[in-house]
Image 1 (cartoon, rainbow, N blue to C red):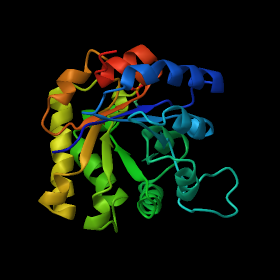
Image 2: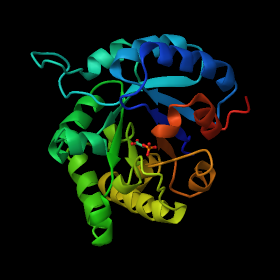
Image 3: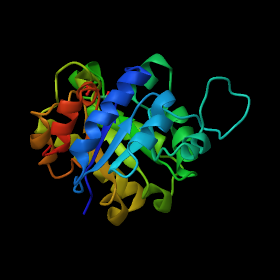
Length: 251
Ligand code: PGA
C-alpha cells in the first residue's frame, strides 16, 4: 500500500563534475526500477542539472533544506517556489545536522513544513533522539515532541503529502545502524502519533523512512519491518555502486 521511498542525502559533498559523473553512471542502472520511488537530494547548486540528467528515469530530485518564504530579502536562502521552478519534488526539513549546527528549532521546522505543504513539494521531516536521550530513556518523549511540534497546525489533507524520516542521531555517519527491531519500535510509535493527529487511514498512507548508516548489507532487514517504508541514505548514497545496490538495481 505504501510505495517504498529511498532517498539519498548527499549533504555537502561532490563538485559539479562529480555530480555529472554520478548521474551518467546511475542512469543505465535504474531503467526498469518501478517498485521503489527514488530520490536524490544534492546540494542546491546541482538540482537543476540533475533534474535534467535524470529526465525520463524514475529518479526524482529534492533539496536538503528549504526556507519558509517563497521570496524576499532573505540573503542566502532558497524557498519552495524556487525549488519547484527547477523541478525538485521533495525537500528534507529538520535534519539533525540543521538542528545541531544551524539552530533549527521545532518551531522553525514547523514553519518550513507549512511552507513546503503550501507548494507542490513533499517535505521529508526528520526526527531522532541523541545517544544521551536514548540512554536516559527519553526516546519516546523526544520523538513525540518533535513530531507533534513539527506538525502543529497541519491538517489531515495536507498530511497526505508528508514523509517522516526517523534518524537516530547516534546512528548518523557513525556506522552504527539501529537494529531493525529498535527502528521498528520507534516507527510504530511515530505511526501511532500520526494516527492520533490525522486518523488511522491517513496515518497508514504516510511513509516513515529510516536513516542512519544505511548500507547495502543492512537495507533488506530494515525494509522487512512492517512500519519501515524506505530509507534516507547519507554516506552510502555518494557511491553509485552502493546506492544502486540499496535501490535493488539489477544493473
Ligand atoms: P548516513 O546519513 O547514512 O551517512 O548515516 C544519513 C542522514 O544523515 O540522512
